[in-house]
Image 1 (cartoon, rainbow, N blue to C red):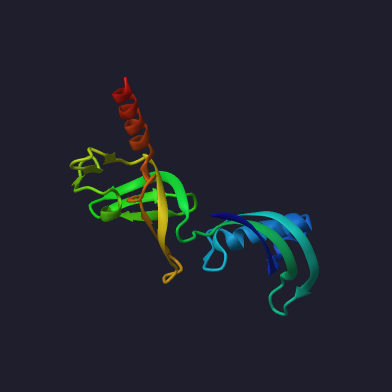
Image 2: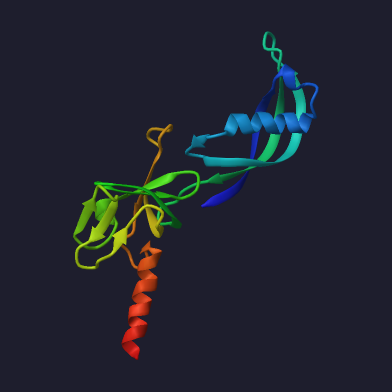
Length: 186
């Protein structure tokens, strides 16, 4: 889920930015500091949205920069267990599929893609269900549920997803099933 969080931190403004507007210099420093930032508390930081308050600056001897105690808002993606998310398939391998859910890719193990016997076509990068005839390809829009989140390796956190529950899977599967049901009623 995406959140707007209010955070307080010391922000280093280098001497090269002293001539610029203070608020803009702090926002630039914050964007550099939090670009690609991942933590269990803040999740995946997307962007800094607003500078709320700038405290008095402190000079650290030998550094030359000024450190400002700053309150600011940021947008962050924090995946939550059992959350239903939607995204696009970014890659398919013999062991599963990767679903892009914004700032990160979640992994859907092959056993969690569909309730069927699944075959993998390496040439076309397609997962196919034997009986259901459902397929999963790169760029398919899918709905999945978060079943695991691990920050064990903070530089490479893992998000486990499933599509084997009611209402989950490739969005095309639902439009195909609805059209089949519509055809039977006539």
